[in-house]
Image 1 (tube, one colour):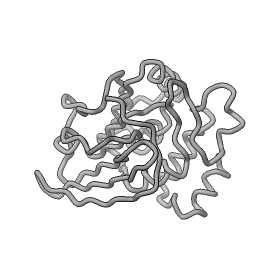
Image 2 (image 1 turned 90 degrees about the vertical axis):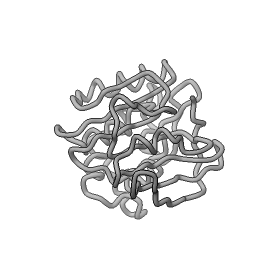
Image 3 (image 1 turned 135 degrees about the horizontal axis):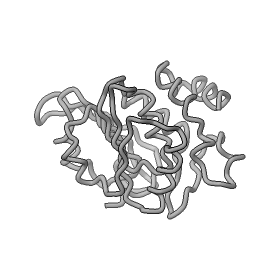
Image 4 (image 1 turned 180 degrees about the horizontal axis):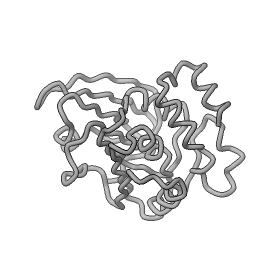
Length: 205
């Protein structure tokens, strides 16, 4: 895992100390299915069943740096899949923060839940449900991240973000999408950046 992190640092995609430490604390090998342990540190997505994947480390690092999670924040992780991103976020959020993880595919939900249970995080709450409408009862959130390609950014997610908060989400078709980085600057205003050239599984509503 240290070699993987070092390669991501050398590639210039992993930069922030707290994110680097969170990667090291969440060994990717603990989040891949049985039989894929030898490939855990390869910089590529891996299947986790039901047509879903654990994302490429480069992509996860890129998205985490855009999201810029901070200790003590409330964070919504949509499509948590293997649980890897939720573990990274929980490590950063710390005891004063909390991560809500949503995963709509039941079999994938159970897989990710079992992976996270082994790491004994106390600040994660997991739900087996779609993230298209966000999670109104726990809103507002400081950060929202999604790991599946949506046709557009759901309005509900924008509404559930605090002013000054950030959303990072892939938008487009599954194999041709851009990672969108939104910062909420006012009640109904946002600054947006777009980074093309990524591939994700489709957002399941």
